[in-house]
Length: 62
Image 1: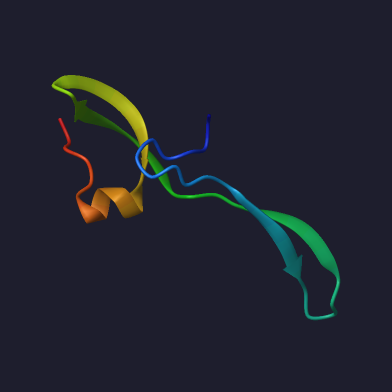
Image 2 (image 1 turned 90 degrees about the vertical axis):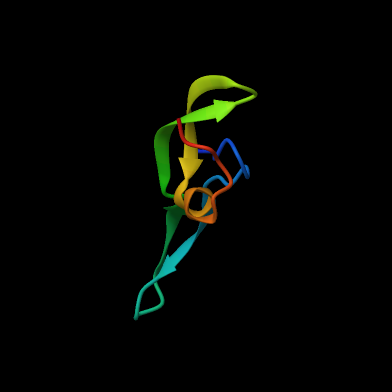
């Protein structure tokens, strides 16, 4: 549960990097997660939230 947004559930995605010569290697794309204090059901908690949710205003910061 380390690299997952607590609001939308976005997590890491896996793929391949392809160089100019066509050589392929594994790569990981991780969301930009921030640990923020959030009010959930009237309780102040610290959760990991992606910056997309923060910018969209989906969380109420404490």
